Amino acid sequence: MITSEEFLAYVAETVRDELWIDHDAYYYGDDIYIPACVSMWYGSYYEFYIRNAKVELRHSNQNALFKGWTVDPRETEPFYLSHNQVRFVTEESDFGATRNAELVFSGEEFFVSTCQYPNAAGRWQYPLPGMSTETVEQVTRFKKLVFPEDPPAPAPVAKRPAELVLHYHAVPARVLDNLCYSPTYTHDAHQLMHQTRYPSMAITHHYWVPLMLLGWGADPLNSMITGWRSWDTWVTVNYPKIVITIMADLPNMNLKLLQGPSTHLGVPDGWAMDTFTRLKRFYGAAAHRGDGVVIIAELRE
Image (cartoon, rainbow, N blue to C red; front, side):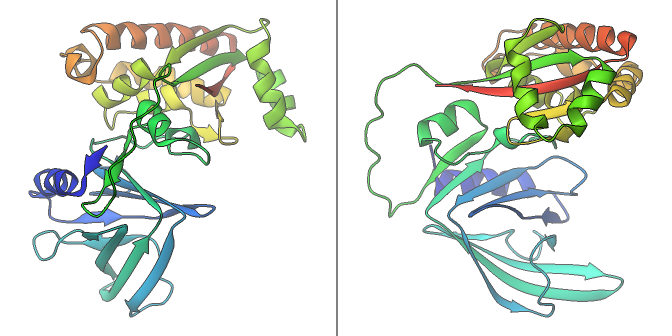
């Protein structure tokens, strides 16, 4: 968990030298996910995830302005935070026309991230319906945001920590094509976890999350780890052409990102490079065969 004061201090320190901050909003049923970065093409500096959220547009020069807004931290705060509510006073310029708006997001439960995180596919990287606060904090990058008005949190029940495991399956192109056109393709994809016909490997969140953080903003590492196209909440896919592209782009990657100290991320030094080497070997063999890679996330509680 993190207090609102700690989160505000993190944001102030993180964006204080930026000329602008872009925000966007993504709607998952009754939940809203809001990332913030210097451009939507890059990873996020901080993020909100609001459960059972409500949106109020208090003022706008353009009523359609509900997503994709920009603020200048030198002129105004990126957002204003109060109990279970975050308010954005926004400004966006498009072809010289300035559009102003004030948006208020409220909700039953706030989660935030306090790390710079790369763009990535996979709905399973966010809080999901039915996930307890403990599970969210164990298997995602989000922490529950605690406000001064909140009552003390109950003591957590002692149990085995949750894990989020990524299973990688190298699937022949012909089989993957048939899978794509199957009316039950997502169900069929999940069945890959119960077969041994195709090469596979698995990584727990204890290691693939630090690997992404060490290689922040670096493709093809992001696509290699979490996939290029989402099929459903738990399944992402790298099609055969994407697998070949990943392998072709790997020589251009700055591997020094993965060779530095990583103990501050909770993994031993050298483990990031070891994990990367395993993935590279797996994808290299898949590319040689012309396979695609199906990635299935499994939550173990």
